[in-house]
Length: 384
Image (cartoon, rainbow, N blue to C red):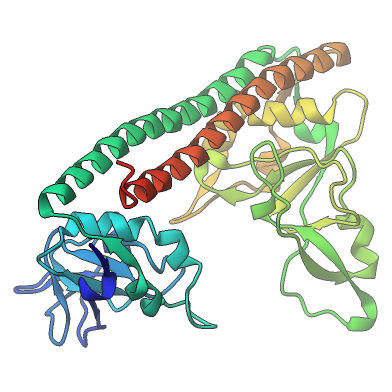
């Protein structure tokens, strides 16, 4: 028999309590906001006055925000104002409803209401129809879904571990490719390159004396590649254009971030015309014939350079950073250009294999998610 979801569930929206505290005082329970719901991390507690309670295992659904339509299981506490508790008729198993709504997440999430903060389209949710067999048959379907999901989760976990192992392998490729750093072949970065910082944001400039150009932010400069999906512009004086303009072959370094990512960067190859850089990005412009930019960039990503940045970086509460002096004194093994070209070729050949494997893994992860949705679709169409 087919029934509308509206006949099987009721949706009870959470409310923001008058009193919220970071400490769990006597009688206070977790305030189940989106963080507690998704990550089981509790930041806030409340006395529950005028709130919707929830028990361990209750179904909750996200009603407001970018995750609207996401369904999951509750922890004991009080329902947050962006969530709702789903109460279920005794004729259906909570797990049966959970998997049904889970299979409609994409439809719900892309049919949200509101022009500002997105909201769950409850009318759409309530209009869904599903086949409601006997409780025994519901048990069988739920069991089969969870068996298949368990197998799928195991495969996904293996793929994710392989992807993490690729990061270790990439680092090993870089570390093994370079000659040993010794006094005989050591040069400091400032001895072979001109190092400079970028433009400070937020300056007040005269419109008659300034120009607007695209610029690189820290978010654009990743470890070994550029993320140019979003390029912003910045105002600078007309006389500063040449000083801050990036040129083909500049080696880029980031000033700050997590301590183990200090000095991350890559080689600029004129990907964006007339592009300058922010003050949190350094550029090193090779100024003699002793080194190749790609060689310097790959060395900067290798183990010895990473250890140097880690050891010499300055740590604040939430951020680590390097300054121009630290970057300038980065030691680099300088070998004949022929050997540098050979090193670059070997690194890129091996890294291309990693790229190919990673692409295959990413495709498999996408297919796994599609398979998950296919399992749910079949489950509620009699295919299991």
